[in-house]
Image 1 (cartoon, rainbow, N blue to C red):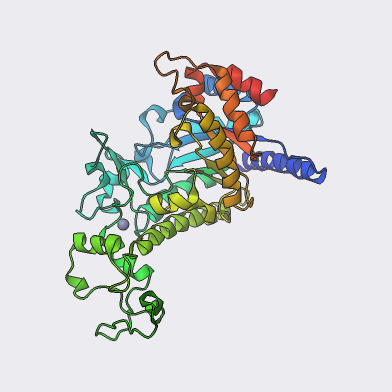
Image 2: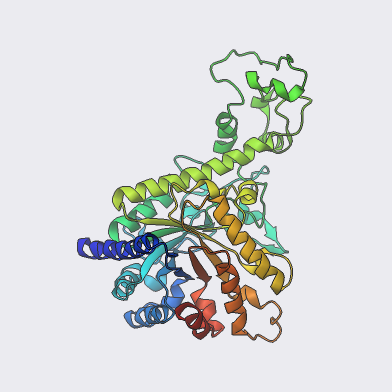
Length: 438
Ligand SMILES: [Zn+2]
């Protein structure tokens, strides 16, 4: 039904690609891509409000709109046929994705649909209908039992590993529906990881993961023998005897409860008497679960629309976020068409000038980590820039310019601003226009 519009979208994408190719042929720097993250409320729920929003994007020379359409509570802003129970009440009579794509394409702006991937609302339909898909701690609890800074934590993180589970029964079908029914230009991953702010080392020890963790690293042969194979010490350095792959699960494993198994994965040793190195396999397991989802999402989306662009909001350091969040995004270059690291000031220490220096350094390092294989848009959060002005609620526009220039100093492929809403509240659109148009 959307063939004409899809063709139009493909032509748009092709146009931008062609401009970049031509620039490269001339030996010139390809044009800097400008993107903005936005929430549904920024676009409203009428044709007029969507038009006014798109007009603002156009004035600021934005090429790519990244619009959140699967929200933190699990609701979606399109008329889902597969999951009608997810349609946000305020969008029951107005399909935001359909309207946004039409109006943005009319102005030559791409639309990338942003999904909150693995974090769901505790009152959301996914958790209500499938509590068994949620991540589980060593104590058998879910993430909404946690507290953060003395406040209750209401997000329920879903297990990325379980099959069948949330990933293949819910999240991937939502992506497929978007790509097949709407001429969107891209799918944007967010929360594509394990929980990091509340409990980086606590999840997931659900029944499925307790079975799969040892299997993933082949810590015990499934083909026998039934008796335990102990490590044979034939090499003088204890850890050098790993290679013959002895049984690395402790005696009596089958009788261990959830807490004891979790303790082994976090504090155990692969070789008795060796270093406490078992957690390496816990982290690798999580990294592999997230990477598998990123790959599957890309493969399924490209099968429907080969021109679809897959993008992701990621933490600033893929090596460290691999350990803490299972988000080793430097490994995702085959399946991600542009990375948008959240280089927000709140993710750095120090004063504003220190942030600017670190923003240049981290943007350069991010392109090294991804080996310049895919475009990278340095992400700036406008609210975060004004820590010093918190009491006065003033937003000196030159700070936004200096942050963009600091990111530009590393020569990234683009700049992405968080967010359309904060730009409006801080009255910073005119400054953004001056920086991005001029
Ligand atoms: Zn799990």
